[in-house]
Length: 205
Ligand code: 5GP
Image 1 (cartoon, protein in one colour):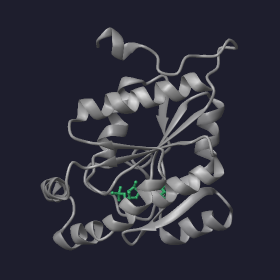
Image 2: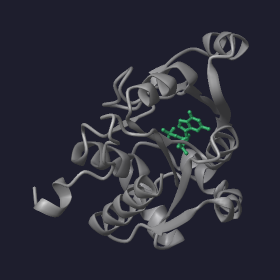
Image 3: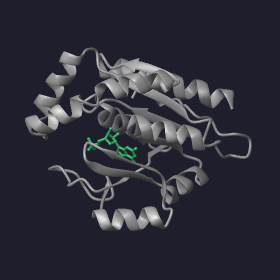
Image 4: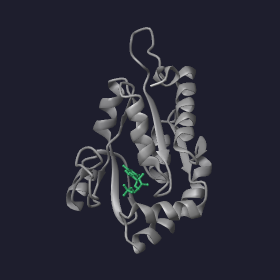
């Protein structure tokens, strides 16, 4: 690990605790945001944690309950909605996804920078609730590149891919309300740009 990378992005304040920072990362499906979030956490394990959402979607091969998502049934999801357990929730590509209030509150109390991997509507809902949240939209270099990634991923069938692509116009329109748009050309460049955005916001507070 080089020196620059190992430097803390979010310095602790004099009382030894960091101020909570909320960083929301949204992208079209296949835009690479899951990899980006995982890499950020790998690079800053004692500073950042991801808010693990609950979903009614079935796990993809390799996904782990409690790590990638909390995989729950639709009746359980709506029972939790009724109990007010979600900060926000959305129907995306035919499944429900929700950000768990308790998870976020715990991470913020522990002084972590919390990363959210949510859709554009979820991002805007989080901004409403926490106006200081930093919203970053990850844009693929081109629509063609995005289609290629979705096909190469081989996790979704063609119909599923079409469903995901149909959402692009809405996602691009809403990205105008984000604080930053980062084009994901090369993963390393994208990570550095996001790290510098986080460092800048940590300084400002
Ligand atoms: P996937 O099924 O590919 O894991 O996720 C589909 C979409 O749902 C992605 O855009 C992802 O960011 C979004 N998503 C995941 N968790 C949440 C959540 O808790 N709330 C909202 N609004 N969107 C989410």
